[in-house]
Image 1 (cartoon, helix red, strand yellow):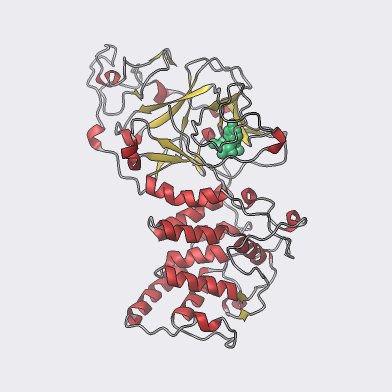
Image 2 (cartoon, helix red, strand yellow):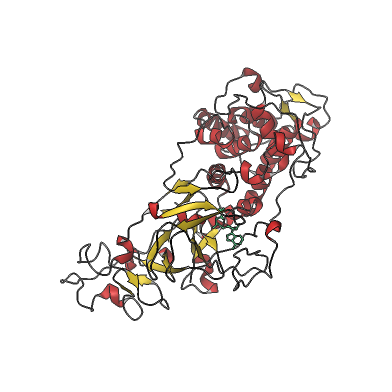
Amino acid sequence: MKVPPTPPNKTVVRNSRTRLGAVKSKAQSNLSVVSNAPITASSSQTPLPPSPHSLRTQPSSIKQYFTPHMIHLWLKNLESIVHLNEAWNKKLNEDFTSWYWILHREKIKNSHQSLPITKEEYSLIASYIKTFPCSTSVIQAISAIIFRPPQVVKEIYDRITLGKKEPEEDTQWLGTIYKPFISKTLARHYEELLNIEKNLIQFDYSLALLWDKNVSPPQAYQPYRVYNNIDDEVIPYLKYTLENLINWKVKSPDVEFNYGCDCEDNCQDKKCSCAADNEDGYPMKNGRLIRSDIGPIYECNSNCKCNETCPFRVIQNSVRNNSNFEIFKTPNKGWGVRTLVTIKEGSFVMEHVGEILESRTAKLREVCYDKLDMLTYFDFDFGFDESKRSNVLCADSNYWCNISRFLNHSCNPNLITIPFFVEYKDIRFQRVAFFAQRNIPASTELTFDYKIKSDDFECLCGSSLCRYNKGPSKTNYKKSKRSKMEID
Ligand SMILES: C[S@@+](CC[C@H](N)C(=O)[O-])C[C@H]1O[C@@H](n2cnc3c(N)ncnc32)[C@H](O)[C@@H]1O
């Protein structure tokens, strides 16, 4: 992953009240072209050289600029357009995350007055006309890239598509963009454009949230204790969920596997069919694992005849108690999680949750995550061999998540991951539980083994058993490359 270098200092006015959502100024809608565009990079893809003043007026890091919330909104928008087309996704992601357009957005956001449309914006829109069929989503995506109201983007889109001349006709570049639109499908096209116009009137509020800090996101719900005595970074705005959320593109679980036991004695007899699904029987006793060399754990569920007090319902009934944990800033691995109470060996600690994606959607998002060096996915690949890899679902916990999102890796971890099944026994819908591998004293950081196969992982676990690094310098911390986490 290459993070673009810090951009140069530009003169921008801070603390403006400019809002994208409010399509407020006529001037913004009155298109005018500036040939001496205020932003002078020669190409939208070219990273700009760093500047010593950059921190004063520009986002100091890509992480600060692209918060999980913004990325989530962007990806939702993207997924509605590209429908699993990787090449398109790449183009959109590249434009969206290029420093050129980041600077452009900052400039517009911070300007007190409406800035005229630049020739670079026209060129960008023209490049999308060539690439994508026109739709509300495309207009909205462009609007998110250049930070102009979609109505304005649409107006330019129309001008270009219908071959209208721009006010500043003699500008050289106009000739290349405004080719007359001669097409038999013109009438149909008009109709499409009219429909788009209607949709745009209901301007998507979430797009405004993408860039305008003055449009406040829903109140951050912070269910965990957070402690930071290292620096002044605050925890990103995230959406906390107790259970996995299934992305709409994921095929529903196979109901054939939704079965339960018919024990009449509340599963007191060892013959329970759910317990029998477990290799060597149900592996938990008195609320704790009795052995760790096990396959997945199968529990009773709502299809069973037993009730909530059945002994084969330990994980599902385990208390998800946030007050036992604290998210804290580590000196060298970003945020981590520690326990505030002693945890006994074999106890259930937490479940890994996120937004469940199928592999093609994950691949689409990956383009953006790779560029931004964001967190990655947790593959639910237990029991899948390489040939069936495309059926593996994964949890994306960049935005929808629980505290497990902050668990760091260690080569000598105190947690193990074990897949488990409750309602759905379809292997694609495996869930993942973290258990304590040993007694864990209060105040200890909780870690698990990411099982990263890449040699690029610069592990800072600090364990004498570390299998990645031959002692990296602590002051030389670099973010690790994106890599997949796997379950035991
Ligand atoms: C699942 S997140 C854990 C939370 C993360 N520390 C944070 O601040 O958001 C995974 C990321 O944490 C960092 N990380 C976790 N364990 C690490 C380790 N042992 N060495 C270096 N970096 C680690 C890497 O940046 C990795 O991409």
